[in-house]
Image (cartoon, rainbow, N blue to C red; front, top):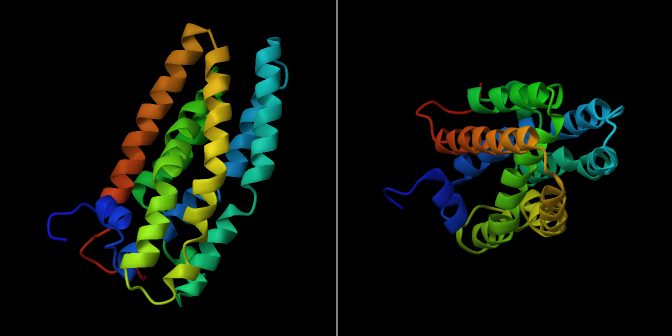
Length: 210
């Protein structure tokens, strides 16, 4: 495992209990915020004259409802690892996740709230591609106690985000405004950098418990 990045350890099923716990804690902090950002995005499109954007408003509302409770999947996974779920209240979001949440709020309140689609494309694309194999490899190879009952978040998103991505690809084909397309691309790039930095920082020298 020497030389492997935290992401590669998670994907290959080589993650330690500590690394996986850190991953779940930081995941909780952005997943809990997701329904709120989708609610703001829908509200920002309330009076948009373009019927395509009105359909997006409805999509954001529907997606908000779908994302509700996914933070509970993370808490259940922590509980099944033998961790007190209250750890998420004692460990603050890392700088990258704090910036991610703040950036999401800024995007949905901007002149191009549809830019939040860039965020969805990055994170749901990661789940679509890596969620299921990561869950399977952790269950089969990590040796973490009770791990088969502690990958519900990864398994759940690996399944549902396949449908989300198919829908998202169709939606992106409907958007033609150059400014909105640029904003979507920028959002995707920023989220990619923040998420990658969060993963890379999952193995600090100090323990995660406060």
